[in-house]
Length: 423
Image (tube, rainbow, N blue to C red):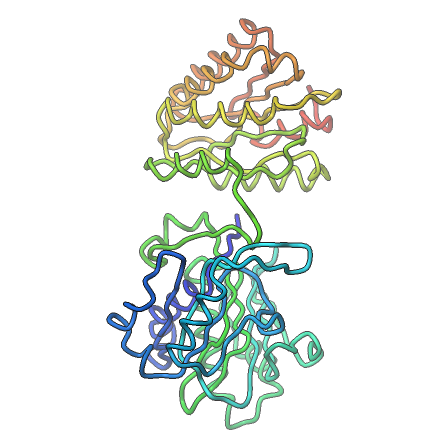
């Protein structure tokens, strides 16, 4: 599972769309939210969203960083004209948050909600299930009141039980238990049914019979995209604040956007010794987890996938990019390239290997100079032909290439490369 942060705007957009369904119509969040970026013509927004000129507003950056109020980056109870001025003064402004510097390029605008009490709710994925945190005392000082936060673990595949709900609501006055309990249950169903790995509403408030999330932080499991593409809508996974895609990452991102296949690349450590070219989103997670379990996180150079049956040219461009990155610098200990994956359902292994072979041929001299050892493990349609192609390639290029089929455990080549397994 790859947890990817999403904008507050998208989390609230999805809450507005799906919360009634998961609360059986009990809770409705209007979802009056607008996202403004450098290309937005702010003066035209009221045509589509008349409430911008009818209600008092809240404005804040939507750039995947927290504690915005403590940073003085939240405008409260503002008119539309005040909101426009505030945004224009800060659009593209460089700000320093701790050790990270970045530009403010996206802002969220929503109605100002007068309130008194603020509550806290967070749900996060753990190895054994999903942990729910709840407190009657939320807001910017939640860390100072962490002793008032209650939590329960809902095991994998199970529903939130009445016993668990009672444990979360132990500090809630009797007259509020029905409403808050109903909202927590609905929020958990929303979270677990739509592929979330983290959801934090801090604070959320009650106004009469309504529950309103004032702030939201969320991450999705991006391997769920196939199942939830319609539920998520046009979702964006922005880079972290201050983060900037490298030229290679931008190239693969652009390539991915032009194909029906999936091509992903994140460079973790340009000087890493262990580079991967993994077929399948699930497999890429398993390989990365295996490296971590063996204690070699520092050696892992990249994370990514090629899947969805990319054609030969797409696979060639993907492989060439990775090979170029891994051979820019030498390491006296040598380097490893893992070409791995599970057993493909419909991807022609031999066809995708044609693109990889072409890239390896072009980078022969660099591979030899950097003392690269290639370990291949694949299964699926035409895998025998593909493995034989790779075996012959190693002999022809005089580059050590070891090949393994489905008889070998999927991640065994990780331990082989790191010296923990048999050769």
